[in-house]
Amino acid sequence: MSDARTAQRPVPEIEPALAPFFAAARERRLVVQRCAGCGALRFPPREICSGCLATAATWVPVSGRGEVFSYNVMHQVYHPGFASEVPYAVVVVKLTEGPKMVSNLVDCPPREIRIGMPVEVTFEELSPEVTLPKFRRAL
Amino acid sequence: MRPLLRSRTSTARRGMLYRGTLYLPKYDGARATSAAVRLRPADRGFVNFARKNASFYVRAVRGGSPGWRLTPAPPSLTRKRMNLKGKLAIAGLGVTAQGKVYDRSHVGFAVEAVRLALADAGLEREDLDGLLLNPGLAWGTAAMGSFMLQQALGLRNLRLSAAMNLGGATAGAMVQQAALAIAAGMCTTVACVFSDRPLKPPEEQRGRGEGSGSAASYAFARGLDAAYGQFGINAMYAMVARRHMHVYGTTQDHLGAVAVAQRRWANMNAAAQFHDRPLTLAEYHASRWVVEPFHVLDCCLVSNGGIAVIVTSAERARSLRRPPVYLWGMGQGHPGGEPAETLTSGAVLAGATALRMAGVEPRDVDVCELYDCYTFTVLVTLEDYGFCAKGESGPFVAAGHTAPGGSLPVNTGGGQLSSSYMWGMTPLAEAVLQARGEAGDRQVARRDVVLVSGNGGLLSTHSTLVLSPLPS
Image (cartoon, rainbow over all chains, first blue to last red; front, side, top):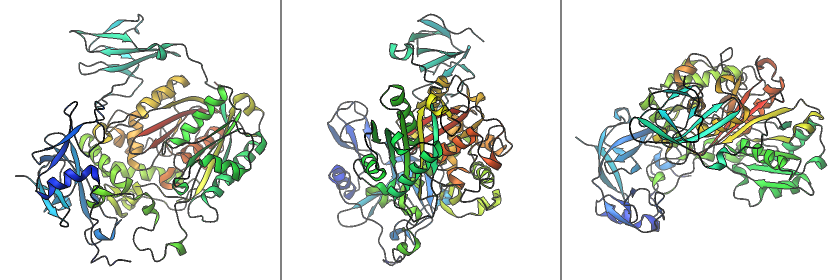
């Protein structure tokens, strides 16, 4: 049984579908998928566009700006890596360009989170391979 | 009130009141109600104008000012339908021990539930020629679960068999599938069963640390979600509930009112896991958080056990031991898209379909057994069936309408929040008891029209049954 004080938060495996996302994040850029058929932006990535069923897609940079669409505050510990962090908030950010992302807000206590709050992307390096986009309050 | 549209192509005047139910592909602001609806400039989609038992479907297209062009729906929706109302019935109910019971496997609970349901109906195993299974988590990815169960039950020569999984909507969907197969002459008598055993006995949990309790069963997460700490279905529903609070002003008190109302029902149900535990709103607020805005008392129980029902023709059901519970209406609705955007469930579509078949309106419903994975699910379901306006479910429940003595009894056995969690089978089982008048201390006075809902995924799938002790 791992010690809650030293346990690491889970580092996501870089599955092929998300490789371009993590490659961009390492360079501190936020990218989403863009359908080559209808131009719709989407995240998380899909193999085939659910809007027009086109198979081709590219990854394009987005502004990294958006607003809090919804949030929750996790109290229950499901992974030892979060034992010292509860209660912590998980947010859904709606990017200015449209797609939504599950994420965390840094430097913002759960009590101060409001739906509609403007946010901007920031990056947290978890390992040499994995940098995780997160968000912070935008002024 | 304007007369109903008569011609195949008609014009509905904007702003004019029409009687019927309005369904829109984009649900924002749409009223799922059989009361009068008012077409607004932004409305588009299917409009169902029901009169007596007849239905008239039209597609509303935004046309030139000032009117609306209404064109007929595809012929498949307007063709005269086979009327199955009252032709099929639930003839037996089997409920095993529920909750922290460990003496059987998931297969064992399923066998036990079917045995009890057959005994209840006064039927033998040989009478069964159909078997539908909703495999709970413990069934894992076992292929062909209904065949596995057939072998465990020693059943021969089935004419219908399937494992079905629409999450919490499966219970109703199994009854519907059974009804359709029986009406089509494929088979005569079908057992529909759910079982699960997600809870491990305390001695097996020891040494596993965090996440070995009941919550762990539903805490699946991987990849990015896990990296951000977003674990399980609780966290996902919490996001949608928070949106509902933001958009409609639903409060923590409103969520708590659902928990308290259902606990009052559970206190009258000796079989409920929380039967002996009264609950006040203050105690609800003081209960531990799981994931805000959900306290532990906003979340359903996690239970071991099994439940089965026997579906057969109304004619056969009348010759059996128990009073038949007639199937008046049935429907499904699977909206797709993002529930956090629409804040709407499949109850809009499923309810309209089932109520139309039953020939009743929401105001005719005497008692509701609504799928309650969370307090929030009850709220959104009440809205989507049209028992109250969109966004007004919180005040509706807080006013006491759904509690004992209220105008619309809801989840009269305590539901999955306070009695037991058998996916959609808990509401279905309670509906059967209420319709038969066998619900003891908690029996409602009026039980002619009993509505049962099932909801699966994240407001992803939905089934509706309208049941009655009366054949028509």
